[in-house]
Image (cartoon, rainbow, N blue to C red; front, side, top):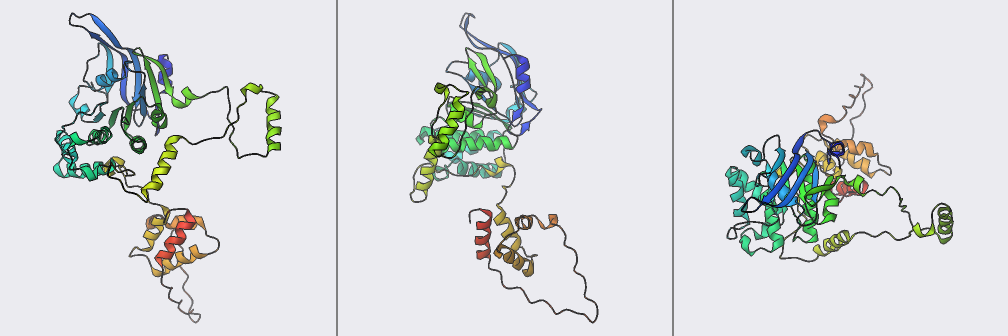
Length: 413
């Protein structure tokens, strides 16, 4: 791909187009030499690309194509033979720049006699994190990767999948702005793979940049915005997945099952313009990952496991902000505020009990009080025409209100 095409396609990250370049590579070349200085292998050959803020960028290619060598040069572990690299506008060897990078190598190099908590505490100390903050982050990360129950076991006793989990946690202990992951799902079970992909998406939404090198193309397809495909040390293809995977010469139609007579009529119309051998009819299927996760989710409700746990949320400090609560919880939270009057609470119960619920009003109740429209003051009755005081509102049953709101909003109770 020519340089002009690379420039046009850059910057379509998870958060939309972003002009901030995090990684810039120009003419990058790495030639390995033997003892006598003779060229032994041209691992990377005149590579150009850019990675922008908030983007998930994939490095793909067969073994020995130059992916790992490129990653090591981005980290400052190898010097390029030719070319130019900038990470956050500095050389990869810039010390302050290194503190903004999190790296998960293909093989986890950990101290086998340290346990999970001690491992994270050790790496947090390398970044000069205060003791209290190291403890908080370690607890959150262990919960996120499902190793809370094994925090006192030595890392040397872990399976490969559990070592990948603790390795991923140590790569995120410094809350990095650039995360480089080399085969992050290797050795993980399908649930762990799904959670790693969810984590990558969450990091990109927060504006962090992720460079992912993997041989599992389905994982790359699920999370990456753009990819480069290496072969022989050169970039053979580059662009967004939408552009690279599109097949403009074919169209797929998906619809509910049709009666036989209707199907024959549709096929008869299609055969007028398309040759019979180019028409394919099949039944859509879900992928194996989705089916596997569905089966395990059902089993989790009735069985226990002594292995790594799953289904945990992304660590709070990595999310960067508080998760949005469902509308049901927010409405009920407003009802229980000390400043909330019994009359207001009763009006909500009356509203959700009506045959037809005004969803706009219900959503408005979920907003903070300072953002709600101010009602017009009630007119004061004139002298001699005083109205009797209204009856006190009935007691509010919050359990019933929660059940009613949950059914109306389609949210879990």
